[in-house]
Image (spheres, rainbow, N blue to C red):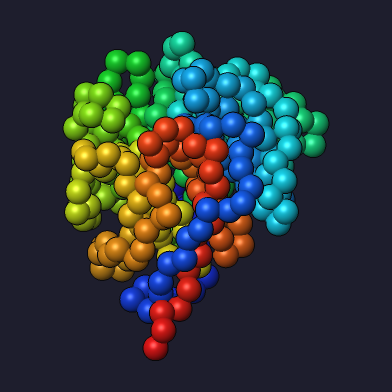
Length: 309
């Protein structure tokens, strides 16, 4: 029997055609170039967990960013270094799902900002990295990923973020999709189907996942194949940011309209960014780290603004 999932209502109904984009590189930086970081917000602050440094080494660092001042402070360490996992805030702690270092992990780690400590609190049903996570109501969904052998098609769900069960299947096995939630439905954008992480076969599919049933439907297609992109809901609008195309990292930003399943360009970043993380605080989306020509310590602020009449 389908489960009832509470829905969220967009904070604005402004027509995207009346909106423009402003983006700028901020004067403050991360402590080091990082990519495949897990990012989450709690109490108006940004937490960055794990990732890869410029040397390609998996790190366990947890940093807290005050977006009001640009201050970046060490906040602790993960129990296990990991990159390419997914992070979601649940209550007063941040859960980190899977990821990889020398192997693909099954661990669920819980970071407590109050004590600056991390504990392994559970195990996924199997190894999973390069995945996306989404919170819908009281549920956490894990979508796609990589088990060390190939891309994953499964969608997992847990009401507590720990005890995951199979919910459904995506339209195709993918790793590195971007994810956003709108009115209780989950949207996935692109992803890697096969081959090398930046040179393989990317998909153009935009999928909608019903969290009540696990049903996935391809509702539209991207203008170009894309993976390693970032998605965020800003001012009630779903933004698709950067990522990797077959020709390299992208600076493009698109707005997706769930009502008619259309994707439209809205602007661009100051430079191409792939494999970073994006978090929203207030009316700003922060793009942190990633890769352009090389791994980055850059922070980019993205705002929606009214177009001139």
